[in-house]
Figure 1 (cartoon, rainbow, N blue to C red):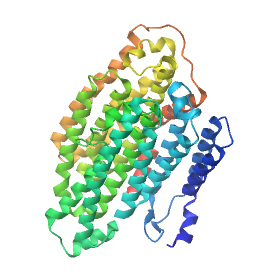
Figure 2 (cartoon, helix red, strand yellow):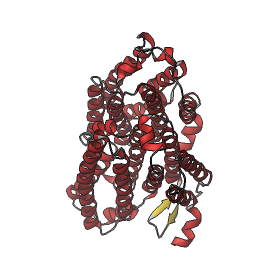
Figure 3 (cartoon, one colour):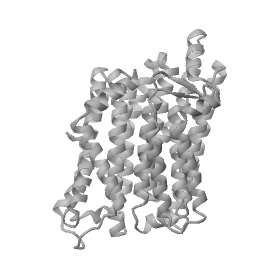
Figure 4 (tube, rainbow, N blue to C red):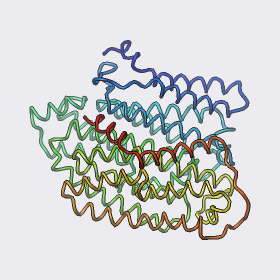
Length: 476
């Protein structure tokens, strides 16, 4: 399909871009930057309203992108993530005032541009557009992490992120160029046809795949490519941290799944066990190091690394239950982790610190916030009947059905370890007296975001059938 015809299916993306540029323009004239944030929210909601479910896969812009049920799923997920991140950015507080409300309008426009990049990642169907979409999100992420220009930790985090990201991008690009040299193609489906018709040296094909996985492993914070994550998550503005732990990670998994399913399915016997080993390493490192953390953002950062390990279980087994589990887990994780960070923002706005000790006695100061944060932590731990349990049930079931018993046992042990440090925070909130007495206020945007995330984890956990059926249609 040519560019002009493709525009009729490109309305959500055009709305995001138009809103982002409108915010940049209006920033020159509006003194109240909060209006720009609400304009960004209106843009994401309007984009969601124009998302269309494709009856059949449609190649857009001469086949550079594809509009199918898979890209539709991640388009909805990306827009939802950006919407909740914008709500978090409108919450007030010292850090958020510098990063959001009273900052120049480019903060909100950068978030919308990043949302556009995420949608492109989910729709990319060839190596060139995969690389360009990943790099566009990466560059925008570097800017967002370093947005607190007067904050030393923010600047240091942005520099580390840039250095690690540049190296991983270079390695991934080398793997893509090697694959192009072996097949002469950049379209994923044509690569698969070429490899099936004229088999290339299997060692070189696997090498190209593993080099590509290095770059994608950086995006999803998969061990041993996770070193950047804790420092970046701690130094970035908290709304940006929430975005990074969910948005690029989810879309990184979407590209990895599409690449494995489209181009390398015939080599599953070779890469499946490698992914299983990386899944065990990722979840173990994330959970073990999280135990000793005293900063809530670092703890949730290591937790997000461990969560990536659980999601990798479904990809490693790569059966029907596993792939269904990956998509369900991504939805559950998005609601859960964004909700957890919305709770963190509320507490840090009131206390001025991200130390875990500041959560002592939170149930007395704000029963609603303590209960909400507890539910998000329980969902991360995989406790029924919350969304996290449904995701873990599917990925565990896939490992058992695929006879990956070692992977299932390691994941079960890691879940117990994770429950320990999640419940440590719950104990602080309910069984430890507060350092300072008094009530805790909630901003309206934060309350709306918390409520949306709560509804999400409860709806997926209590009524999972609609999501399961939708995910199965997406995979077909």
